[in-house]
Image (cartoon, rainbow over all chains, first blue to last red; front, top):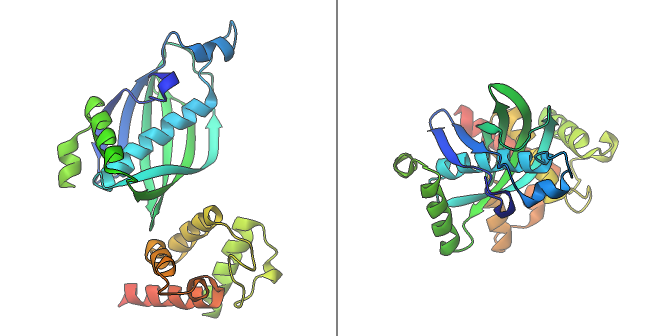
Length: 157
Length: 93
């Protein structure tokens, strides 16, 4: 994770487009300027960033389901539960699944686990629109490559 | 159509916290009920689930933006319910 750059996913662990699920991993950094404020002397991964990590996870699933032709944008977060503190150095396993793929939107559910124990979960809704610019798509493909995204699976649906 | 309308009206009432008695077949979802696009995603999700269909929102939006259709054709609830019935019938056919 590079919190200051909103890079909240480190690696795609598993992507199952047929089963409409994804698993990623992400390590909370030991040091970040964010921990200087959240909180001084008691560093905690902010809940909003945990929610963002779930959104990015499900976003990668949706990009795959749309075969890299369209981009999901976060629209709504429901039933978000932050069950326990997440601290620097912890390794997160983040699981996402599709609940419903509508016309121009999708509903997903995600869970973050540490050592097999759920630490937060939420239902996350996205608007899905064509990439606003070709450069945007190219950048997402470059990021996907860096994350170990199985592009060949996405390409062949 | 009447049962379709009841289902849709209940969904709108619960999703948007609008008194059920204010929702009629003549109501325009946007102009009369003040439903915004984000709330309409929730409504579309609930309708898709309730009827086992996929409302073609993108197609409708495109038709409105292109001037090929008016918002009344899709967002007046009586018209919306007619379209839902057609989608359900097409699914069953």
